[in-house]
Image (cartoon, rainbow, N blue to C red; front, side, top):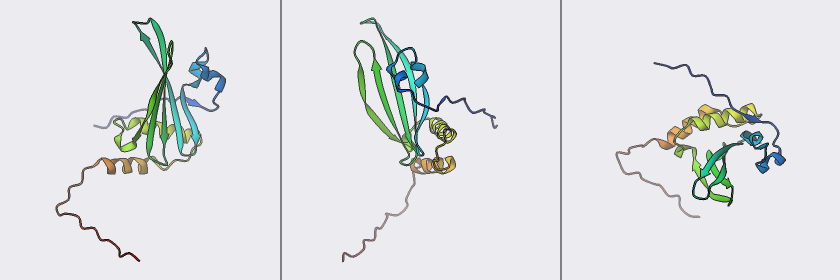
Amino acid sequence: MDIDRKPRELKLIEQFDAAASDLGGHAPDIVGYQKVDDLTVLERKLIPVFVVPGKTDHIVIQTDVYDFNDYSVTHYALAYGKDDVFQPPVREKFSEVEGKQSIRDAHRALVELGGNPPAIDEIMSYVLELTRDVSVSNPLKLKASPRP
């Protein structure tokens, strides 16, 4: 059974306003997808967090940078509140990403923002190739070329 799914709406940021990135009243203006270059797009999300012991409201900015040249995504998180906390970035190859829909959405956003990444079919077939286990019946023989 094939379910006809409508693509989810993507919030695209045409122009990034650095003044809005101070997390003031305009913070929602920085949420969404933003083109970095023809092969790279980032997605920014605001995640509200309430910490009970210190009774401090925190807000986390999660930024995922999708690199369609390297076929990888780098995740950044920064928590603003009483004490600002920055987590070290985490980089994943597309083949390691559990939900592949995020890759498709990032690709679609980059194309809509005027980027020029490889075709999504090419990317997804590469990702599937890397995640597939290939059994080998005989040991592989490597041939070395003679040194000059």
